[in-house]
Amino acid sequence: MNDFAQWLAGTQLSLAIQVRLWVIPTVQSIHIAGIGIVLASVFMIDLRIFGWAGRDQTLQQTTRRFCPWLWSALVVLLITGVLMVIGEPVRELMSLSFWLKMSLLLIGIVVATLFQLALRRNDPNWEDEFSSRWTTKSLAVLTLLIWCSIIVLGRLIAYDHVWGSWSLRPIV
Amino acid sequence: MDITTTLKAIESTGLAAGIRDSLYAFPLIESFHVIGLTMTFGTIAIVDFRLLGLASAHRPFTKVAEILKWTWVAFGLTVITGALMFITNASVYFSNLQFRWKMVLIALSGINMFIFDRTCGRNVNRWENDNAAPPSGKVAAVLSLILWISVIFLGRWIGFTTTGQATEPEINLDDLFR
Image (tube, rainbow over all chains, first blue to last red):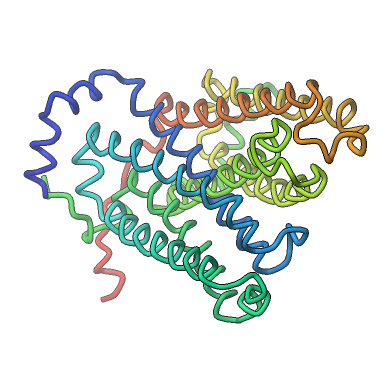
């Protein structure tokens, strides 16, 4: 991985990002704004599952309102994320936080997809029973925690020293 | 007491020193700052998009705006974590241009919200079922989005213009489990 990161850091595109000092902060800011859309969308669906907000809408309506925003924001996050990896390959790819974040991201996406499919497959009458299940509620809380952990791990990429000897960085 | 001594006094408090000396405090506080600010921005965006008629257009505005109570909770978290980061290096942040502009823009967002409440928001019952707010509401929504996105940019920029933590202590995590 270190060889790959070193190779990537030497590519034209990476060098183009590295010499323009405004690119990384700008891309990071867009990335953060995108996270805002994702987190708020997940939160809105969770609040609806708990019946704490948006009760004038069904769960299906709420999901239909927020899922397109969630997926579009994730695409923005993917694009800006890839740009950050290309711009600073060693910092990202050689950080334990980055790989933990990617693993949680995968889980978050799988849970969101399964949730959406379950809602689509069943008729609207089913959703009241579905939301009142304790498994649905715990999954809702777990999902929010997963996305918050993704944010924490994302920030911790900048502080890889917190992992001490678990850090993936080659010892210099 | 002038501002320089005040800032120095803030930096030398036990709390500020404790955060500075800890390996994990600052990164974790900063992470929670990001959670708070993304939630603040995301929920505000939901309301702004509703004002513009870009999303939730069929729902009454007052129903959509109910989310704002959660915005305040998230904003509270962001302010507290922001203050905790500020005290660790108060004089550097205080003299940082990006930090100053960020504070100005947050204040402007507040003023924008206040004006909206006093004008367009006052007769909300007249338009809350329309697909979009009247022009003054749309202006407030666009201003709000521009201001908050700029706040995010400036905030990120602070990290690139202040030196931050000068020393990174070495630690071996394995020692913790020995």
